[in-house]
Structure formats: C-alpha cells, structure tokens
Image (tube, rainbow, N blue to C red; front, top):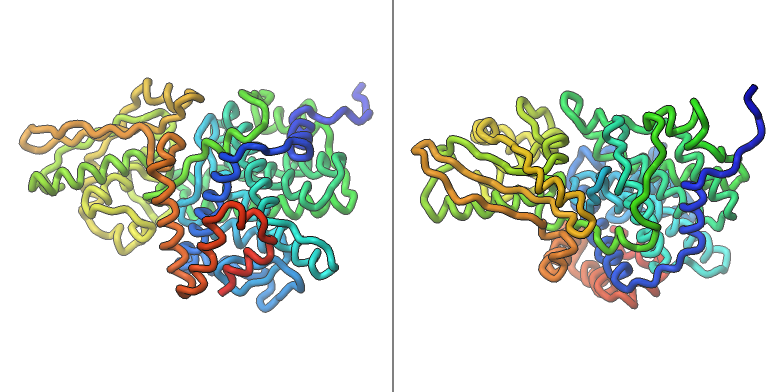
Length: 480
C-alpha cells in the first residue's frame, strides 16, 4: 500500500534555495565578470533587433498594451508585465547565438537568465519607487546573474539532459525561478514551492536544435523558459503549493519519468565558479563548440591569401575535434535556415575560409546561396581526438579545442592550425575583454545616437557606478 504522507523536500531543491537565500557573493572577479556579461548580453539583444524574424515575436501579447510601472525592453519602447518582458529580453539576447556559453556534460547559455532577472528587477524597482520605497540596484541584478549562472552551470557539470533528449533551457527555468523568487521576497518555503513547479513542468525537447527539425525555436526557447520562471515565482508568491519530491518520487518524479531513473550528480558546491569561468562569444556568432574551429579557419584564410591559393584548390579539410562537437554540429546535407547553419561546423568553417569573416548575416539565405559554401562543406570531415574530449571535461582546463588541416588537389598539405582555447575563455581574459567592450560599443551604435551611447558606456564600464545605480534608471538608458 502506498502512503499519502507528504515527503521531505528533495535535497537538490533545498540546496538551491539555501544557496540563493543565504550565500554571500564576495568574489570581486565574479562581480567584474558579471558586469562584462551584462553588457555583452544586452549588446547581443540590441544586434538581434536588426532581424525581423526576432522582432516579430516581441512586444505585448495584445498589441497596444502598456503596463503601468511595467518592465522596459532595452532598445525598444515596450513597457510590459514582467512575464512578457522576460520573454522579450530572453528572446533578444539568445536570437543570434552570440551570448555567453557554459560547456560541460550539459551545455547552455547562463546569461539567458538575464531575461527574467532584469525584467523582474526593473518591474519591482519601478513599483517600489511609485510606492515611495527603495528600488533594487544593479548590484542586485549582478548578484542574481552570478547565482543563476552558478545553479545552471553546476547542475550541468555532471548531468547531461541532451542525452535524454531534453533541452538545456530546463536549467534556465530552474535557475531563473530561484533567483526571481528571492527578488520577489518569497520565504524559504515559497521558494521551494516555486523551484519545484519549475521541475514539474514538461520540459522542452531538443528536436528544434537538430536535423531534420532545426529551427528558430532554439532562438526563443530560453526566452520562453526565463519568462515561465517569472510566472511560476509569481504564482508561488500567491501561496500556490509545491511538490517536495518532484525529482525523487517513484514512477512520477523527474528522475524516473525523464532521466532514466538516475539522480543528479554534483561536482562542487554552489559558490561563484561558473561566472568566474564563463565563456564569452566575442568574435563570432557561432555555436560554441565551433568557436576555435572558426578562429583556425580565419588563420587559414590569411595563410591561403598570402600563399596565393584558392579554396577551389582544396581537396579535403580535416577537423580534429572533441566528441561533443561531433554529436551536436557535425552535419552534412542541405541546411534549410539560419538556425540550421549556425549549428553546422562545416558551414561555420567554410564561410570564413572563403570570405575571411563570419557574422550573423552570413547565416542568412542571401549568403548561403553562394554555391562555393556547400561545395567546400562537402570536403570537410570531423574526427574525434580523445585527448581533446578529455581536456574538454577536465575542470582545470575546460578547453574547446579544434585543429584544422587543409589538403590540396596537388597532394600538398598546409600545416595544421590548432586552437585549444577560444578568445572568450577565462584563460584569455586579458586579451578578450577589450574586444568584448568593443563588441558592446558596436552594438550600442546599431541602436542609439552618440550621446546616448556615451551615457550607457560611462556607467556600464564603471563597476562601482553601475552597482550603485537603481535598476530602472539603468534600463531607462536603453529606451529609444
């Protein structure tokens, strides 16, 4: 006979809530990296506003709706409820596959959580000011980002959701729910309720990330997840109940239904490790497992040009790579849309070899129509190097290595070009951050007049000023 007695809360849920409620972030590196993450993520959203495929999804659900004291959507004039604002911001920042990345047993983009965090913080701040109370500051946003990164990233270290067909945005939903619940002032019990509700949800399938169904949902899936998190946290604030053994319940729990009966494994306690080691996409809007391959392709393009060789002379290109790359983005055959192309390593290598660049526009139909790209793609093969795979999982290295070898029709071969760590890796911060700031400047210039760009930059590049600034005042700088 089964008992109806309510179980104790699953330890995984308790650990998340204890961390969000009680852990004090003291790492200056984490806050500095979070500030860089903030500006890079918002910049990616501003660039996405140039693409109608993205902007058609933005705005209120009912056209013309304006929410009093609502959250603002950067780069637009939208003023929305926090749930829809979270979707808007989340969709923008993920649209071009250019925001940060975390690679482990599960990969993902922890800055996706900014959609829910910024929308909730902005909405709360505007309502606080309207009620004569103190608003949240941007340090609260940075703290929320660090903790959301940590929750998503630490669960991802040892637990592969993709191997059971579940998309990584489940972790965005869980992390955003926990952090937003804390911002809303929920009690520990209410936060547990909220986080349990996030796990109860049926989770997104990865089918929209893979052939033959690759499509644009992968660009708004994180916006959907982070907005759902805000919705669930708000529901928990009303006193809506939770489900203590949502993970461990026999037959009906997450582990048995969706994770092949296996409990989560953990490599480390929650602190600020993930933010401190986050991977930035600085140079190329490309799926991160291909970042070093694109860097190598850019080097080869320069060498080909200097040697007076043409891509037509190439007989074969071998990419020595890691297992995750082969599993996710090693792809032959027709590519039907931009979402398909930016998850194909052959495409992401062929374009820079031919043109000497790889931008978001290079995934669009106009560029893809160039027959040279598919001709060169067909000559590119991937081979796993077990050492690359080992270093990819090594917590002290976390490399994302790729090596390219070009063979010509005349039988000659170019020297292999190896790139172990991309420009956005923690090991290359000194080299990468100036380029990240330049990327932000370029993205601001896409949307704002010079004076407004300067106002945003003056605050955004000053750690102390940014942390002290009320959230709504900072977001107002991005209203166009």
